[in-house]
Image (cartoon, rainbow, N blue to C red; front, side, top):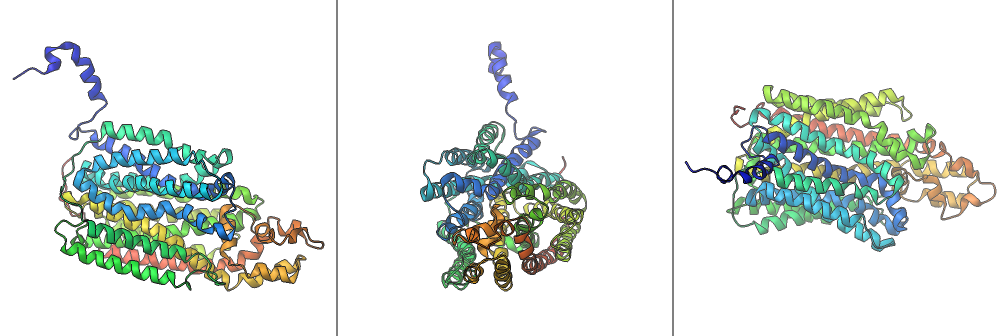
Length: 580
């Protein structure tokens, strides 16, 4: 047998050995843990940047000199929130298919690089006012492309790297990053935006550079490829269809011609109907395509079809919960306890930490147990626990005792963790090895689309609930504090979305509503009471609870539907269990 170059030339041995220390072969016994740590970092980075902007919007708009609550700027506000979410929801299936065609690791590495370049561009916004907003929205969309790649392919890379009897715990850790990242983003954004609004984008640069170099050096192509032409008709109909649906639902939040929401705008139902028609067309195209973007016949598998349906219901319910709890804490509970409106975004993230702890505890443990006992007991139990906590949250008073609230959101996070890892493992184990990239993209699409849809659906439900009761309470409350009847009525006639967004962004809602009329400077007006910490919370508590009831009952019904979908799911993973 021929000697290696290192053996014949000893001077080459140290360099070759050092090179190998930085690289792991796909069949190395520790490679799966390297893949887990890198993909978990990628998932964490992608999800943190989905939520980090939420809490930093006031600082961002102050930095570029725009009032986010001005009617002309609501569109900027919405797309600063939604651009990243919509992009990740639309592209993950395409990204998954590209991974199957050209190599999942190769496309994943590209995602890290795209994400990092966008983070650099975001932190150097050269324009003020509307131009600055468009720069940020555009680069957030590009960053969403990188985020979509990281989200779509992490589960596929892990499924390739881990044997069936360890996938649950591996995907459990990966899902911990997905959910924990959304809350870590709130904390990190709150802290960094107090220093400099650009810092919320700086934080992604060193992590992105490190992750890119690490993934290029350590990850290996061990999955099965399916080379062939890209299914352009399917790609275009799916991308356009889902984009139009999400844009239409998002537009439903914006007021339209005196109506509190945009659902009376003909564009909204028309765009949703057109988008759904394109998605149906996409399914027909895929059934006939020789090499489809996604094999629609995968949905004939109960594990794949019902697992993704349950995934969508879970994402819808959990996404709605997060936004409603933020408004509840920032608009009512925290001000009543003496916190300034400006400080409420950061403290809302802190007080919601029990939910993250619940998920962190449950997801890896549930994944490990599901590897041994099957997914069904955990997916059903997790969804039912979430449904119970939604109903319990409706039953507590708006001005609650914190320990009760903390227990309920902890149990909700626990339920989410119990459900997510076993459900993900069951979905990914139910498909052939050469279609795992596309399957991971489908799973991510349901998850991301649920998060984006929840904003439009639950904000609309809350606004409709407030529109029935808030105007009268607002008008009478303002007049009691000396505001003229004409100004009070004008303010009461404004769409409730302004008050919700003000509370959500950490502004003083009453100060924002009364500033245009200069009512606070008029004689006889009790300005200190109106802009104090108790007037708005006391005013909105009753109407808000009415809207909250509608929202959380809807979320409970969604999670119950997810529990039913999980109940008919097979109890064990479809793959044959491999030996470690």
